[in-house]
Image 1 (cartoon, rainbow, N blue to C red):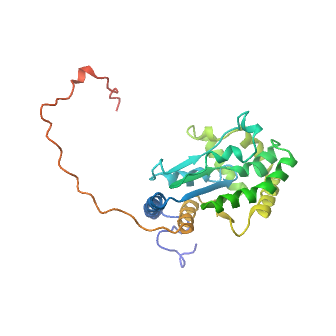
Image 2 (image 1 turned 135 degrees about the vertical axis):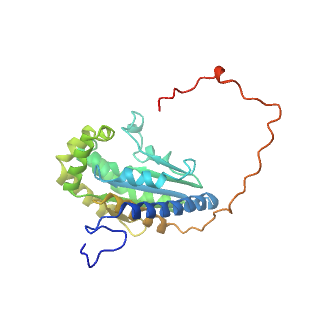
Image 3 (image 1 turned 30 degrees about the vertical axis):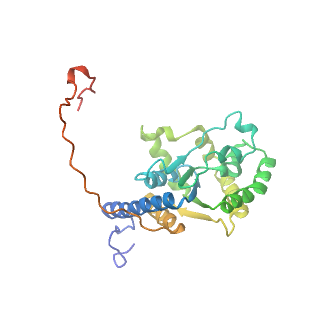
Length: 271
């Protein structure tokens, strides 16, 4: 970004200023709380899918969305390896128990779209399984929408250069090393196969009633703000923020006395 086109809140290189990013994130999170209250009030059902390559920033976006929300209303589903019983079920059955009831929002950190992309590339499913997926998936999603469920699908897109940079950062950071799995290591060698599987998935599951929304995610901060802003635009809601509450005075303790410290176990004052 040139000096001539330098905008307030942006650095000269086009990156967001930290203060501007945090201010915008806070503003959007307040709107997410309003959306949450509307969903609860109207008994809406909301499903949001987060898909994309490893280290594309899905988890970071989900974290910022849920940060200020009530976990009783908005919860995250991040399924691991299927159980022995799940492997014997109809593929979509392993996800149905996680779908929202009225007044709930569910965010899927990877979803049923594991089948045609990750599982396919890694050889965990057969081509017949993928073929069946493409027959069932549009019908399954349309059933959800006929049941008055908002279904929103995001694909986080990241370049191979940026993904490599993030992998290296995770390897150097002890708090993030757990994010790198053996599958991640294998997927790095299958970039082209992954791309072809994703392209076919888009071709067969991107339809007007439920399109894929691509989040350009090389810049994490912009990706988070863009994703949240778009999510808010997908569900009409009204502001139900209650008027400010005035705290009532405390009751008199009367003859109540707290038990002595010596009768309780306290966490040591290390800090």
